[in-house]
Length: 431
Image (cartoon, rainbow, N blue to C red; front, top):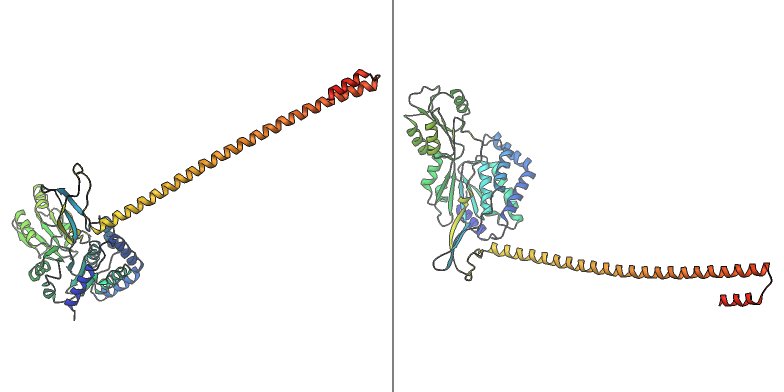
């Protein structure tokens, strides 16, 4: 027996206690990492669903498509989207914020479940995923367990994401103080049912339901192939045409076809088959589905692609103008916790940069001092070498002089008589 009251209480506590400065993008990245690591386990759970005729074969390519879409999203949580000074000299603007608790009512499709989980975490909401059937139960419950494991690693209450199988949807959706928004994904009948029983704001999203309007038979063979896929499809045929199938709705013209589709459609994908360019243009303009095409299959292979704006509220905010006269163009952001955190981070970064600049300047000064000292030492060495060269030159000159005196004196004595004046001259030369 499911305990709706306990689930609602846990959901409120989870988003209330969630740190506003938690990096949702980082958490989502880690969720994709764990899905990749445990992909074999997910496939085993999926085989159980398929074997019990209770699900479809999960496609890793579509999981990657969801990842690519999530990676491309900007951080929308508590984002200032407009700001100006009003006539009362107050700063007036709009800022996004989380809703609180969101309830996803769906048909069990795993891709819808995963996309909703990720966008709830990015926007700091808690999410109750509910279904009346057990479709894809093994696969979906394992994914929720893996997500909760990541949440706990970030010290976030795992009840931020809960899954509930119940036949008591009306009781769940009557809790207007606990649930802030209901998102419904499914066919038109399911959408209308939830709208009827919910006492909370409901947003609908079509998925896996298709509309075809056949105005002429030019593309009949292609149309047959589409119909033979046995997908969830409403077929509208112009009244004067004979078609080789029975399950269709007869309409008088393009206007009735558009009116019928807009009334009955789940809002997902619609196609017209015609050679009339004017009617094709009218169909494209007036049909109220997300995907509209001419002479091509409506069976697009797509994820639900739930607008992240459905997970956010816009707040009007007023703040006494802190800007001095003449500085009205200065940038100002509302003082949120995230803004404070980013400012502190910026200050830390600037302090680190200034420290590095100071260290580089000191290193440059030390290098300059070392260079000057080396040049001075080199100059002194050059002077010492020059002095040694001078002394060596003088020694060589003196030696040459003595040798000249010696040779002259020796040979003069050896070949001739010694004279008194020669001896005196030698003495004088040596002195």
